[in-house]
Length: 249
Length: 249
DNA sequence: CGAAAACTTGACCCAACTCAACGAACGTGG
DNA sequence: CCACGTTCGTTGAGTTGGGTCAAGTTTTCG
Image (cartoon, rainbow over all chains, first blue to last red; front, side, top):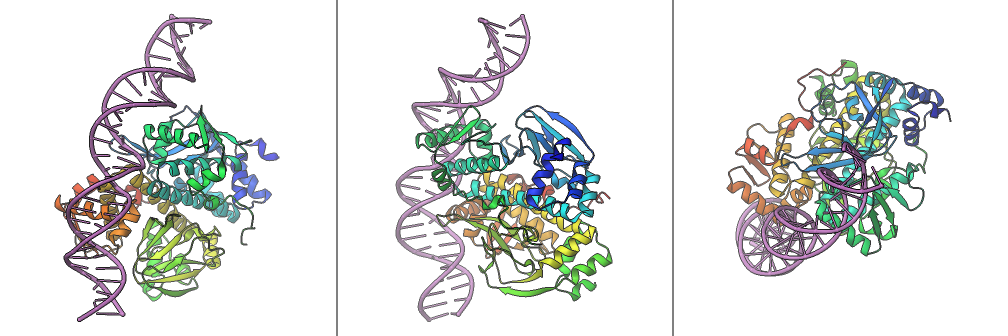
């Protein structure tokens, strides 16, 4: 696959899953001018209030999370990002960051020139559809997270998070067998679910004792996926990963 | 203003606030084929699981909310919508609804033909920017709501909701003096903030007794906006309403 | 005017938080 | 390779914000 020659192969592949791209579209994406940049864990990739960024970042390797800080110092993680995923498509057309993005692990990002990305997006309808749909899917995940923190108890929230991450890791080919890497501390799991790290710890123990899932050493092993999905009311439709039906023309 | 001749004048005006549109862009929007449709309060405008909608709806008059149902029957409202706002831009490029949209008041919607909307969006860069940016702003509001239900206490959540609604009503010219209409029951306020109606009631009383805000008879009267904004940690930046700085070319 | 829906208030309960102490894992530098 | 500080995880005890249940009251609307 010629994608492998460019840094942006993973990004192009992800977009093509959302909407089919022809060879020219794909070549245009691969040719996007960009610079690589490396980040340590916890390093800020995007900062709230930053204005007029001239780039849009895509993860080449590693994991990242999107976060808002409260004045009391607490933190709410609003999304997680896997390799190949874009980190700030909102800056394509919005000029100010309303939140922070931090690396979860050592991370390599491609910072794509924003004007070049705008150009191909406004001139290539298929690319526009793919990139736009990607932002719409992200919004769908945000909606699900509102429901998760707003209306589920601790077990449900964590079960849901584990299921979502599993399905997304699967789709990215990063969860070979039942187990998968989850590079989050219990405090970060709490920040993603609106809980404290202490309560995350207790809840993980309960989930383990119930034979549903084991989370240890940055690794998740799901023992009973149907039960875990039921507990977290997890239905993967909102992730729009099924490329089952062909997109409407 | 010739916009008034079409149903879609309000929509066009809203889009133009996000990104400038020239006369041709505006005319193309006003000419979009659509049908009017009326809804009673609580009527479903969009249903979860619905496939292959051929339209995208815009509110001509009235209010609506976006909602997810949990299996125990509880409900999480994930957004509120004012006159002129689009209700399902996600269906522009996604083929299945992941949530429900209901009318909050008697509502008139314009159901715009989706293919026609796609066409002008993919052929008119300025329209694409405006519509796309509108979806990105919606996503920004979703992120703020995750933080609201995830990390604030009851007073903060409700204070934040009141401030957001006030600012959006102001921007839409619907909050002439300090007071504004809030067509939500206490149960719906609870569904939007992840609380029960009983606790919403008690919290509203506390906010009233503290001299911050009075909510009664579907009307909100904010007595101390700075204090209310402080309590809800409300900073309107995430709404991207300021058209202060010209958009980057 | 009457019924249904929305709001109000009290009593009680529990899920999740706080505070605190301790153990385990993990770098990192000597 | 080990010593040691630091971060992360674990567990207990006590507290509390918000939920539940239940009984009114008020508003709305046909």
